[in-house]
Amino acid sequence: MCLIQSPHPYPDDYDRTWTITNLAPSATASKIHFARLETEAAFDCVIIRDNEGNEIQRIDGIYSSGLWSAEVPSRIVRV
Image (cartoon, rainbow, N blue to C red):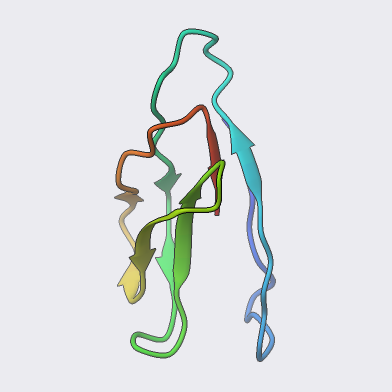
């Protein structure tokens, strides 16, 4: 488990990338679980990318009871 979070509230033009590696050596795909996610819909978003930088998913809005990302076909996920 990896705990990451942005500043609360996050500053204007906040841009940060976290690289998360699935520690299971045989994993061929990964998902990220957000315990809570809150962005201003249509203005701010969280982007899920694979290790090559390809965009897999964009998430915006409020998810106060948790959310799983789309599956990323890699052990490494960039958020």
